Length: 161
Ligand SMILES: [Fe+2]
Image 1: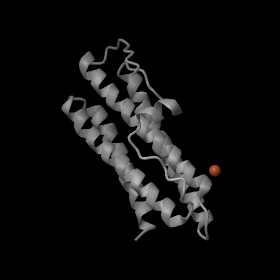
Image 2 (image 1 turned 45 degrees about the vertical axis):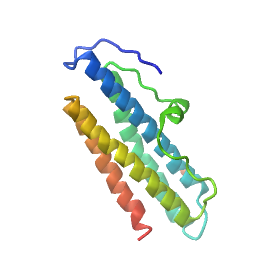
Image 3 (image 1 turned 60 degrees about the horizontal axis):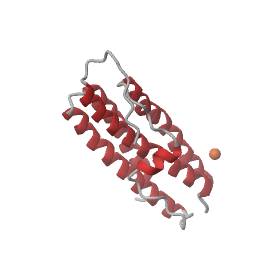
């Protein structure tokens, strides 16, 4: 694991910054994995609702990109090194792999609901982690990400109810 640290005048001590950077890199991996899973659904969806879901999934993916960028950029902001490639994300993410045997609307929407719910739970835990480290700015970022994921989970689950 890369533990590069850079000097900064930011008023958080090095141990605190290192702990938060580790958590941010973990979150970056999970959000990048989630993004790739949404695109996977966008590309492989089949069935009578194809065009609606194909477009919906692409909107979900687009909405994730600015969140991923904000989480990633918080890492060098704190003097850390962002671990942002697909391979780095794959080796760290705690998400289950997207099921390759489903292509229908129900299966795909259910898989995405599970992935969003899992990622939102990770981000919600990260709010408390950052709070515990005394970094309210990172806690606020995780709060924003969690709120966005919660809203998108509503959009997704509405297809199943
Ligand atoms: Fe596309």
